[in-house]
Length: 115
Image (cartoon, rainbow, N blue to C red; front, side):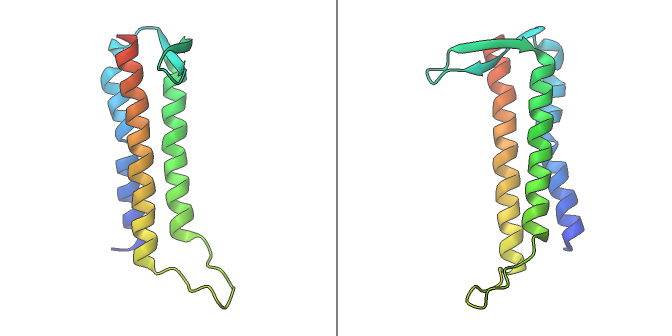
């Protein structure tokens, strides 16, 4: 599989939070919790557009991180070996899955606290 195919697949996976948000969008109230304290008490509320912006930013962060890991130039230091392509691919998938899980968690938590 070439890098473009891998990045396309990662892009599709990173869209899962947006699909989940689209599925629960109508059930979200107009005012949703946006910030929580450490003991999970709501500190501030906002419109549901705030959740949309947060999820969009996390999706963009996921895509940029994946591209950075896949295409970042290697170190020119002689003692530092170049990272193999398979390791880069594995690392980029870890970032994609982790940030996608965080995004879905944000939407799920907001949905739960708002409902």
